[in-house]
Image 1 (cartoon, rainbow, N blue to C red):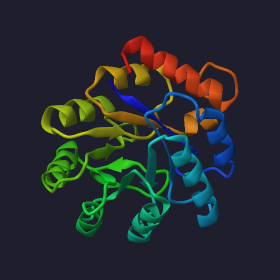
Image 2: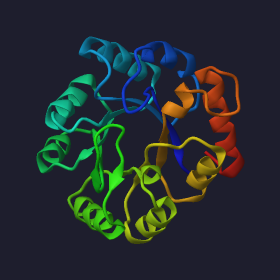
Image 3: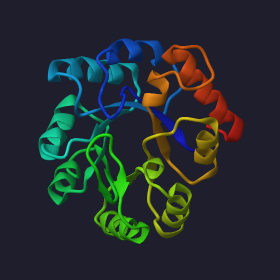
Image 4: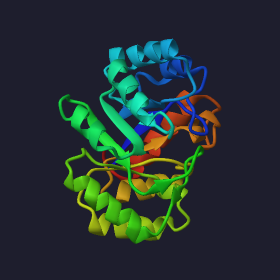
Length: 222
């Protein structure tokens, strides 16, 4: 069943108090913890990355900027990311990461500026995903809930693409959590919904995360 990646982000931007939030959830049983390539100064990113890695959690670094994507990849390398998510697929990025143990999960399909929205025809998205997976990436990051026809996209994608899949963006209710546990998805991310206390639990990130984990266990074993 799918694992939970907590993103210390809101509206596709790492939040200023990310370190404090991480300290509240670092003992939770998570698949991983991550943050975006924008929102914090590099020195603050270093502190956050160090804390995540020291905790033993898998560290995901997500690229949402479009102008300096290659620079962001290098930043992820220096920060010691275990996996790099997002960004448009790049052959040079794959070549660099294949020399390391860092996993690579680029976006499939065209996407808009922040907050990222998935654009284009479903078959075009799938065709791009097929080309990317052939090249040897670790998997795909799919902005399924940031696409107008989410269910249709997920059904077609899963039927046609044989690859590890991370679903990112706009997972903000129990029905979506249930869906993630019922599909062959490796992991899914939640960020803004946790920061905004959108789940029916106390208004702190620890309680919000614990609620999500409880819902996950209700629909599938971790």
